[in-house]
Image (cartoon, rainbow, N blue to C red):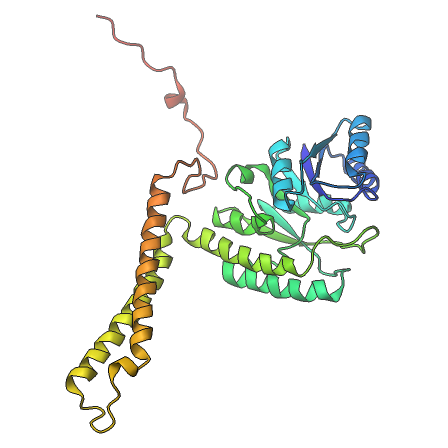
Length: 329
């Protein structure tokens, strides 16, 4: 079974058409689909249409969130409700082509755990395409996960990934990055991207500001989530060392006064003492924050393990035998 998770926010004009396309693909490819529509606080007739589809089709389910929690929350709800071993996500605006589903399955069968869609030819306005390309370059450069389109809503996953990844905020676009950090294989597939037929885009310029801040968060989580002091401590030591060097230099100049015998400028009139003291304070604070972060990680109660097991060897017949009985007295 393949679970299809579709976050919905005011998409009532496209839901019936999208379901029809999914049903046609499933029939043509002989697939069993578990379709989950997640209504993320829609104010139009989306939930009514989802209810009608669920009543008419046994493989359709709907989840309605109490308000607009965001796409990451909607996807998390859908992932939790999914029954299939494979999960496909796509947007509800008909721009993602359901006919690509068999190609995603072929890519997974080749050994990938995550396959991300790539809208090679995009049918979006230039003011979305340009910033998106810059954002994708930054994500690939900072995280090392080389994808052309991290923002693409059409992705295919093995369900086991979501036993190890927790989404919050707007981290849904970084699932391939988070999965790669846990050792899962990530691939990419060029897909057909279609022009928008109904409604308008839900994302504005503020999306890219939030995306950049989320990128910094993901970079920290994937690189230093179990050793924050390695980053904070390094920055703190560098800043602290610069402050100490500045103060040592001032002390030498003040004692010798041989460098400026005629026009010696008093220390309290220089800028270097201010910079040195600021560097000392910043370095001390970064080191302190790093120690606190280490304590939080050491004592937090979490089920997330610092490793990910791909598979185990089968139990040998000898060790799988019935344990020996207790010796009689």
